[in-house]
Image (cartoon, rainbow, N blue to C red; front, side):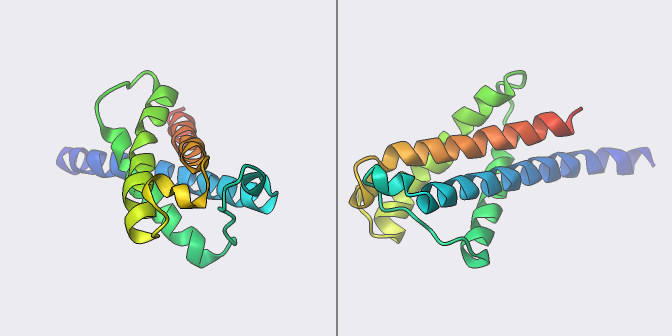
Length: 141
């Protein structure tokens, strides 16, 4: 029985950080959608206003969960919110230097969408990191 318990501990940790990342992905997605729906991104000169749909939301939740696995990295264990902000730089860099220029054809850092696109990407991904950290903090109580 003891052997089974020790084998499930790593799986429990992975499940927890994946769920935290999914929660972060949900809040990140809602923030992006609300900013677009309210016209905030347009008022900042950025052309990001997605339509809220399952097809748009589902991959963002899954990728949020995958990025959440980074919370297993053994640093800043006692500074969870700071860790969330630091980890949010990972998906930001991927979005700015891989997704926008290569997959979406929107130029390096998504500048074809507007000059403030990189700033908004950093803000929205910070929402992901903080939301995931909140989930982890809540679940550890």
